[in-house]
Image (cartoon, rainbow, N blue to C red; front, side, top):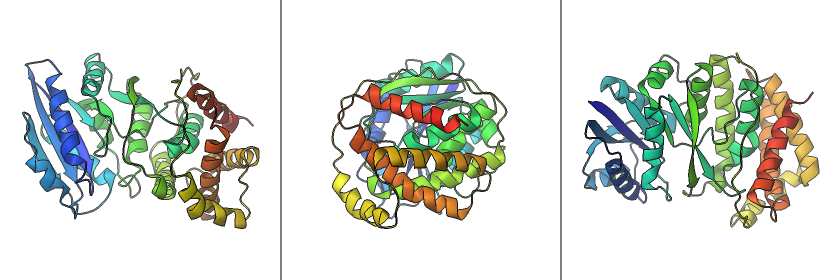
Length: 344
C-alpha cells in the first residue's frame, strides 16, 4: 500500500487556505489508484489569523493532518513536513503554496506520474509574466547554473514533488537559519542536484498567487543569504549542462505595482547613484553576480548591500525594457544574461 501526502505550508493564509485545501482534496481523487492512502498536511507557523482553524473546518474526503510550529519560517514548516514523511513512511510527497490561486486538479496527477516513472524530484515549469518570479529570474537561475551547472527554470517555485529517497537525503543535512526561512526551496533543489537524484520538470501552465512585489527586497536578501548557506553544505561537483529550455510564449502586460515600486524603491536608489537604465544596470548587475559567485561561501556585507539595491533597479528596468516583447523574447534575454555571468 503506497502512501502520498500533500503539504500546504502556511502563515497568515486564512483568506486562501480553505480554497487550496478543497482543491487539493479534489485533485487527490484524480490519482486513480485504490492502493494509495492520501493525506493533506497543513504545516503552519502558529498563524495569528487562525489559518489552521480555517484549514480544519474544510470537509475533505482525505485525511487532514495539522502540524503547528511555534517559530516562523517557511523552511520550518517544510522541515516539519519532512519529519512527518519519514515518521509515517510516506512514499510520494508534494508541497503546494497556500496562496496559490491557479491550482488545477491535473497538477498533482502530472507530478505523481513523474514520481511513478522513477524520478526523485519534480520541479514545475510555469507560464509567468515578466514581472513575476523576480528573485528566480535575475538571481537564482543564473547563479544556480553558473555554480552548480544545472539550468532549472523554476528552482524555487514552491510547488514540488519528491519521493522518500529525497527526504532521507535532505534530512541528513543541517537546516541553517536562512534555509529555515525563504531559502528552503533553493536548498531542496540544490540537494537534488548535488545528491545526483533523478530530476525532471513538468509544465503546469500559468501560476497565479498572492503578489509579493512589496516585499521582494526581503525575499531576495533571504534567498541570497540562503544560497551561501547552501554552498557551505554543498560544493559543486559537476560540469555545466547545455541549456535546452523551450520558453512559453506569453503576452506581456504592464505591472500593476510599477508606480508603487517606483515610490518605494527607485527614487531613493537613483539618489545614491545606482544605475537604473537597462544597459547600464544589466552590465552592473552581471558584474555583481560574477563577484557574488567568487565570494559565494561568505559574501561581504558590502556586496550584499550593493546587490540588494541593484536588484530592484535591474528588475524594474527589465520590466520596462521588455514591455512590448513576447515571453519567448524576454526569456531568451534571461538566458543570455545567464551565459554572460559565466563568461570571463
